Length: 155
Image (cartoon, rainbow, N blue to C red; front, top):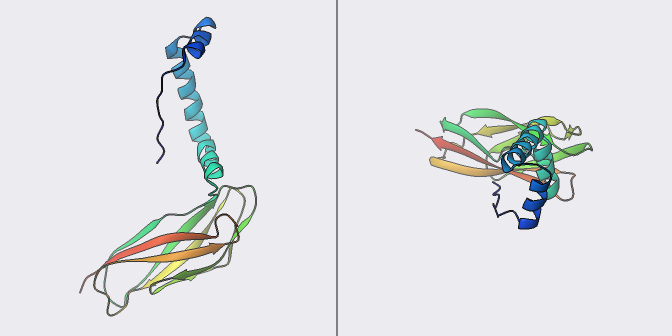
């Protein structure tokens, strides 16, 4: 989440705005209109990705819900690329009985691709389980994406 600090507008800026015939309400309306336009066009998301250096986005948590031992599930992860170059997911690992399938995967500029995670619930699994899956990329400043995998084992 981002927070915006609202500080009073310095007197010089306020005087300059008023000198040009803009009321505070007009200025707020103009800023609001620009923000809505930027938000709708996806420019804000792209700017945040560039500023933070994170050009690949993927969901951070996958909840498989209530499961039973030995069951198998597949979840499709959508990876978004907000850069202007093609990027690749080159592999994946996990610390559980999950498998990352259909990698390597190319992600076009400003596009997306899907990677599947196969979960096989271990026979000895009990209660609430949270494990990690990592996807490896060819992006130097974002070499891996971590996704938490959670499920409740019922017997």
